[in-house]
Length: 86
Image (cartoon, rainbow, N blue to C red; front, side, top):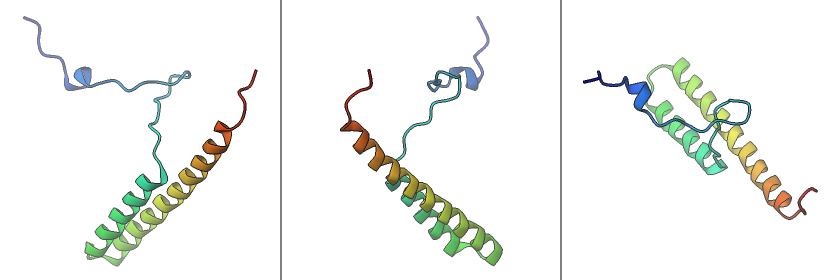
């Protein structure tokens, strides 16, 4: 009997793009805003001001990602109205 496969060999493989890079699932602004809120909740529990500030900085970064995702949604909606390229 063959030895069991290592855990990494049994995991589901993610799709890859044409250049071999891992494909990233689309995440909308709502997803990033929820992560930002989670960071703020955690920040309130941290005893260190330095750690709290770092967590709030991460929350701000998630908000920027959410704004960028929302702008991408708007562009996607506009591009869906355009005729296909030939």
